[in-house]
Length: 183
Image 1 (cartoon, rainbow, N blue to C red):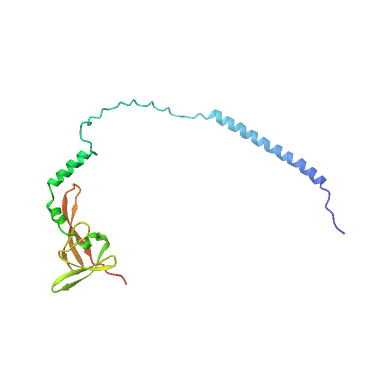
Image 2 (cartoon, rainbow, N blue to C red):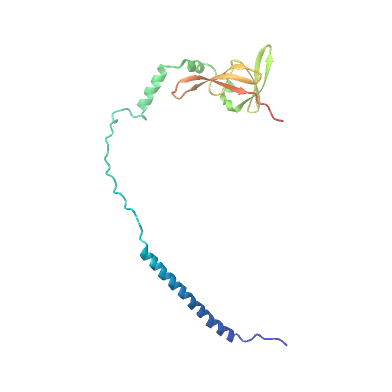
């Protein structure tokens, strides 16, 4: 014997009566909310400070119109002629000699890996691009006209020729420290 579900008529009728009653109850809350919002709109007044009127712009004449334009070719050529007349003795000697292979690399890319003495003269061992170079006092290295002045057991001392903030060429000491490899 199979059981049958009771007819859906009474359930449907009960549902139809309960849903409108619930919806009618919700409407009263919205009415109170609407009244409160209207009251707040009436009571609150925005306070916006007025903008000040724009100031009058007075154009100024350009007084330096007759002066030399700082970006002109004329000013550049005058500066180049002035520098050509006063060659720096430090730089002049460096420009007239043949460049050495290690002058193509910056000092940051070089590392001192050791030093040796041959026939009483000290030599430094430099690693550049995974190649080993042997240098002596008087050799040039680095891109700033660096010349080796002294080679010790733990460092190579050199002097470089660089420009200072005023554009003058000056000598600056530099060193390459011995780089010990960690094992």
